[in-house]
Length: 375
Image: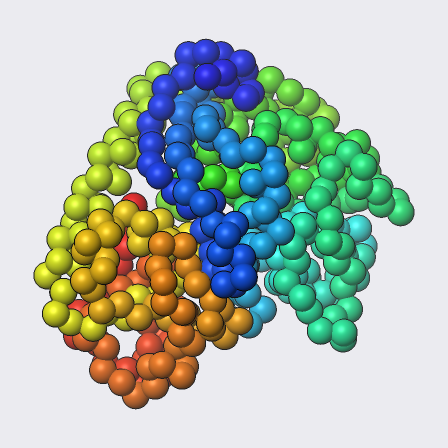
């Protein structure tokens, strides 16, 4: 398998599993669209880019995006995910900039900017969350690409958890370059070598990103990484030299990559052991997104059928929907749990803090809790 950036064949698989195409809740009428496909992720040992080495056909990816159920930060669901990127936006964006958010979801970042006096705003998403008639910011239902047109050059593009969805690292940046103003920049937040899903095609890390900027006319104005994400501000023009990383640092990174399968296996075994201990208890399973669905689909069918699981979500729009691999409807947390004792709480979401705050606000007590951290 060739690397999608440098075309090297010096690549190696680091993760394999079976995974549903839909990693979000779906309406019963769309049940026929849900399928399981093999998933495979590889690392290029030359440029250190991670990539999906068994990508789904385009028509399958289009189905995912056309039916995707985003989290809704504007309704307080997953809002903590955006706190740091919001700070970055106000630091690097000017109030007179023409700002376009690619993959705008429910417009949470655009709303944040609007409330702070930014007015030249636009969002583009293949499946934006429907908003009320009083929403003041222009949002297009569209795939961004070479044919996307703007009334004037764009000063700032936002790519927040979007860059990983494109087939090559440079393609989207080159398209944006052709539409940017002379002072234009691209602000990016991307998973930090994580998010191993069918619809994520690339897996980034700081080592690859530095190499990318060294080999192109892209200037890195800012880079910040934490355990979950990398944040970048990129411009085109004069290159900024970077001393590079040592072979020891790169070697340690590669070793960590090839430990991922073992971590996944250990996490799965621990999780299944926990569930086996709880066969006789009622389990409240909180979450209906990617982490939840991947975890559910790792449970042996015999064990899953023997468990008393109720899936809940604090997003009322997911009430009555289903998740792949589970036959019961999702319940709305506020209706299902108010003032109840939860025997076993499984948090199948990255928003543990918000979920526990919600549990407390509903007046619930909890017997035991299990956080799904890695599957």
